[in-house]
Amino acid sequence: MRNIINKQSLKHIQHYLPLLGIFGAGLIGFYIFSYDRLFQFFIAIAVSLSYVTWGLVHHHIHQDFHLSILVEYLVIAILGLVVVFSVLFQA
Image 1 (cartoon, rainbow, N blue to C red):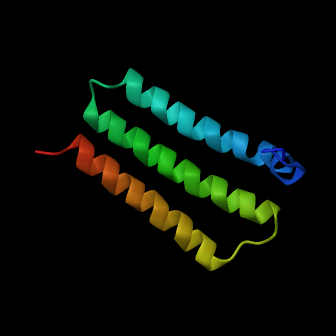
Image 2 (tube, one colour):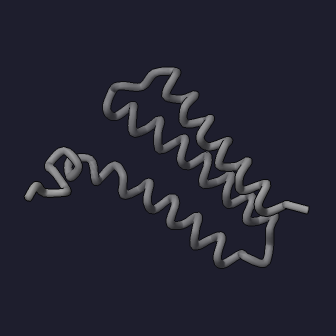
């Protein structure tokens, strides 16, 4: 039986733990401030900006940053914000 976690995955775990922390803090913030939709939206903006920043730093460290990577992270962050906005402020 093959190991599910290989050495390559463990090598990068230190880069992905902060990303999990960003998303975890966002989820906890959403739960704690469930009574305030506007503040939840600002939490979503902060998580999105942190996600883009993390991606830029991650790719800078690995020296494989390109403009297309920035655009990809921005598109995913904006898509996430659109989803959160539509769920929070639906009529």
